[in-house]
Length: 325
Image (cartoon, helix red, strand yellow):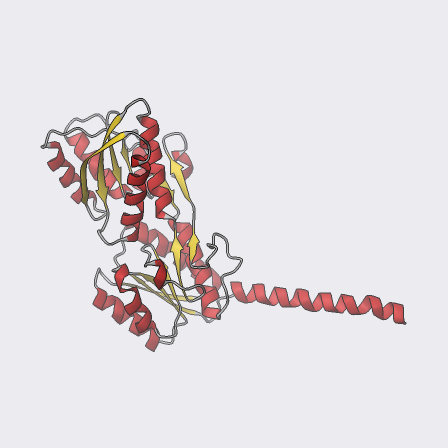
């Protein structure tokens, strides 16, 4: 009997441990009854991709997800946070109108955890398992753009670069632009920045600004844009002025449907795939855990400090664009 008990007892302990692990995993993945409140600064093309994916994954997990557009107004966004608190929501998903207001948003949220997305607050405003960010590492995108330009003009000692940036305070604008310029400047080549301004993610604004740039008579070897929408504006301006897009490669970020179509047609030269669908998926995965009061430990792409979930970027050009269409 003693030998039998020596066999049975370890088996029972193993079953208990396995059951506990299964319950923990189930809790992390089960969102039944969870109420999520998403507030977006402004629902542009890429942010809408994130939202659509978040809706899909929230529905599949059994969570309730409400989406509100702040229309660029901090006042509206704070009202959204108040609605989430008063409405008994479990977690807030927030694309901040202004990242400098993160502390205000956190104070307004009270005890509710916040998953920031698309525009990242300062690191000191984030806290593991409480205030986290889901997105892609913007520095990687800027570096990829610079590497494309340097490879394209590897035989030139001097390169003239025009830069079209997004919103002035947006973390993607800062991260992408700073990494682009740092990588170019560290190359040992002479880099002339013949144009640099904020076109605020807009196709129409970028087109207008590039038309003005052309009137200065300066030459650009490459045009680097913080997103595809602005890059498409440059393409339009080049076509309107009979400028060969082979002589002035236009590069973007996001690999949107229109951006990829432009690359396939031989217009835009290069973009970087930022997975809006992937960010939407991990937005919900992180939100479920925080709503349960669980740690994000073990979640794919989680940074070592537990503050960020970095969904990877991927390079896209004419050789692989069909994969992203």
